[in-house]
Length: 254
Image (cartoon, rainbow, N blue to C red; front, side, top):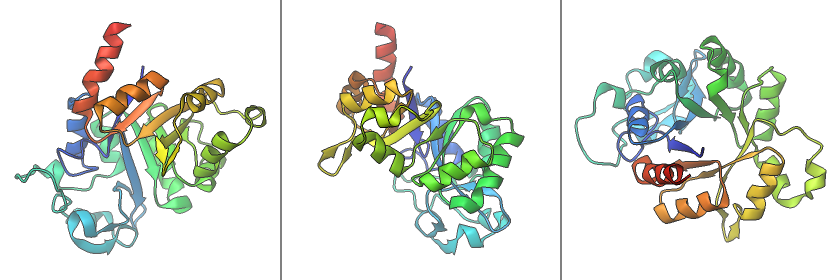
């Protein structure tokens, strides 16, 4: 069954990467959450796309130089460009990873480790402490970061780094078949400039290697249908309410 990821939660309906955005994403048909992680000065993993509070909270400070107590005073709804309204507290606070995994105990999370190597031990320790290894996928653009995740003993699902995706596109399949790709996902845009990445050939190659294909960020119903026809395994979207009925119709037709 195709996974529908709410990109930073339902980020068109509530401030991104908040518990309220995650709740709304799931309520509107998403089956998983895509989010981003940074680490505070006191080594707490928090969920934010940006390294600073400037865009979302209008605070000119780095997360890495702030404590989790500092972040409790930030209002991340100030940068929300959706419909203006009084946001509940869960839409105004930057959550910790513990907050999110605890609030949604049966939900799959795709977590982009933004802070690099330094945050990996606290990130993995948090996931393991909550016994969430089977529902958390660790992702990063950096292949170095992902190799380190494995070195630290992580055996759960993972994304692929940019170098690995490039190898999938460019190298002969025989050269790739000697590696164990089980549990990995190529999380890619459909296009890279004018060059198509997600083609039928790419999807079929990934599947032969036991690699899932997740495509971001898909907000158009027609494009979603085309990608489903290609056999992709996941769609990352800002508008789960738009795409969820398309996936549901596919399930009912089978």
